[in-house]
Length: 112
Image (cartoon, rainbow, N blue to C red; front, side, top):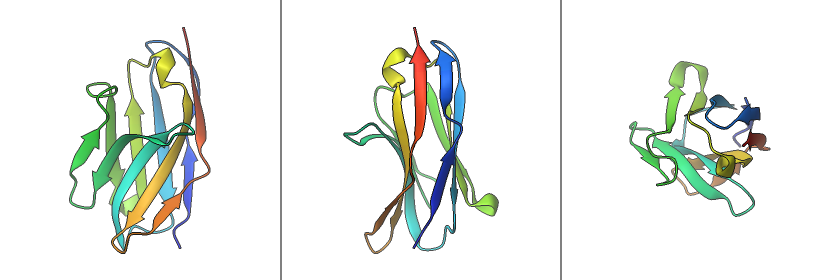
């Protein structure tokens, strides 16, 4: 089992910034950490154990995913936020065996 706890969501005006955090109970056995958004679970950004990152086209150049292995934490720095970035952001951990774990989600609201 991997427990994921997200934090950092909130209300911000368009053009502002937020940083989301996802604290994992462990990083061992995890291949990829990612952030998803909304009920459709749209992939926003991901980072592999090797450090390879990927982003949705809609957030490229504005969002940055990073991780602190010493703290078992993944971050999503969100800059130049737009109203369409509004949604519940979920942290995901995918293990080498193909199992997915999810956090409870954190709400991000961007006002225009």
